[in-house]
Length: 221
DNA sequence: GCGACAG
DNA sequence: ATCTTGTCGC
Image (cartoon, rainbow, N blue to C red):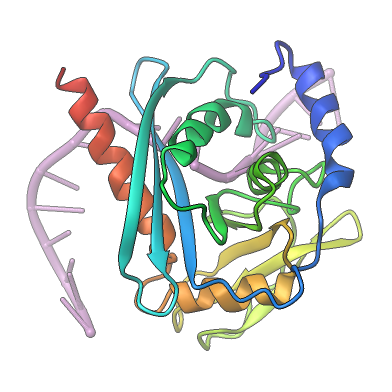
């Protein structure tokens, strides 16, 4: 995968790719598994550890996982952090034996200044359905009702770009947006099904834990 | 012009 | 993201 060498090129690439995002699900789309992706960073270096974990949507059971060690070359710039994580995440994805039904990225999809966050980039790059799940919003929203499952729209420049989703009663919402080849309502339903017990979906939790374990193990060497 | 800004 | 102990609660 080609990583732009400048911020200007990175912004241009996102704008160029944004029209490729498909905002509807494939006919008869009924994923049985979901693959979570996350990256852990080392404190003072560019070392990163990526983890991808496939779980059963109905059970939350871990079915398969893969990891990769890499280097974050691109600097952290809000709106461009996908360029830090993409190469290592794609390497880890390639190591899965079974092609994912659905990707769940740790970050935004359409709820992004150029409508092309990490989840969109992952989806367009792989051709797979993808959802963005973020812990903090970049867009405006009103608090959803306290009940589990309630949602409220995410607004950015007059566009509805995602949803604030309450996954647990009276717990801070998470921010769901389309990544690729899915609609927002389906994305929210699937994320809710993956967040039966905790605020974050099981995909995110498992990938987060595995990426941290992988980084620690790498640093011990 | 200045601050804020996914991870 | 990461640096970081204990503590309150289910």
